[in-house]
Amino acid sequence: MSDLTSASVPPFGPDDHVTGEGAEAILYLDLACPHCAAAWQRIRALRLRLCVRHFPVASKHPRAPALHAAAEAASRQRPEAFFELCDSIYADHGHQDDPHLWERAHRLKLDLDRFEGDRRSDAVVARVRRDFEDGIRAGITGTPAAFVNGGLISTGVPEALAATSAEE
Amino acid sequence: MIEPGTTAPEFTLSDHRGKDLSISDYRGGKVVLCFYPKDFSPVCSDQLSIYQEVKPELDAAGVTLLGISIDHSWAHRAFRESLGIEFTLLADFHPRGEVASAYGAYLPDWGTTNRSLVLIDEGGVVRWVHEAPTPVEIPGANLIFDALSATSA
Image (cartoon, rainbow over all chains, first blue to last red; front, side, top):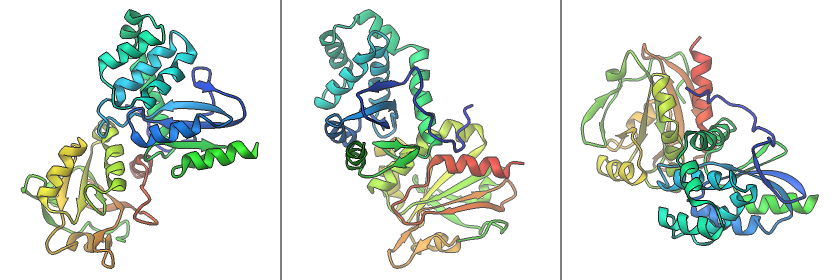
């Protein structure tokens, strides 16, 4: 069973999902969380080197594990497809069922059979859970949550990241 | 707030099913009492959802987490079902906050339980407590695992 005692948030790693240029920030998101959807629109417009990690809260958002597995699976075909799928899900948050994910995968020109296999694979589930457990150990208690220079930001995340971007 | 090293005050409360449960029923196992202000409030929903996500790890550590607030059993039942949580929720409803008061986890000016955690060992002794600086600050699940690690030696 996993060790969930306190630990610093892990720094950027080789299999993290990273986009953009600028000041570095780590963002933990729940793809089924409406607060995250609202924050995402604002954060995407910022100049940041942004690392996005999985934090699905399944009890509150039952579709969250499936959405995160889909984003992780998309990244296995094209790294940038991770962010394209996040954009797509947050932009049209009312459509989260499997047929909607297939439609999104089709639009992103993903291999659907591979997407289906990957998103249900143990490796993808474990990769998503790893991010979640790292977030728990770093003290996350809700989404969205961010880390800048190792410090946890739990409230006002878009504003805090806008300030981080402006300070660079 | 109750001090570590003291015997956990005995109590009996109705759970989300309306069934009476006593803290002594859990003797022989570790218990975390999770006092929280209100069913259905956004912060309390976040807190219990996060704890639900680490329930397998709590189970593996032999810990029973019991949620306690001033809400009635019927509210607990609806809250539990709406949030998809599996923890037992106890109703400190009447007299209002009596058990929370015994543990130093009641806010009389607010009329609610304070956001506090109490770890009770197998022998019924309080081993660790955490009182949130303000009721809107959620103690991370990591703090529970830190306490279990620190008190299991």
